[in-house]
Image (tube, rainbow, N blue to C red; front, side, top):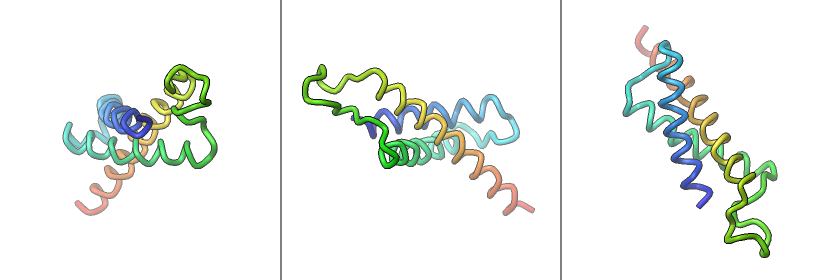
Length: 96
């Protein structure tokens, strides 16, 4: 479940970053793909540094810990934006 949330948040974050920062906008498809990759990486990094799992503690309501969900959305969104920025830099360097 946390991976799905991170991937969706990454796609949204990539498209949001492309919409706000016109200099890194690569089109909806590439923004989404970059965002999905970044969201997956961002979510994985959060898990590695000890952010709480969505599975949570056994007594929680089916893993619906709001803090963990917000963390995954934020990590996925930021990761998506960062990977989109990197893709933009690489594509501009190749075009020269």
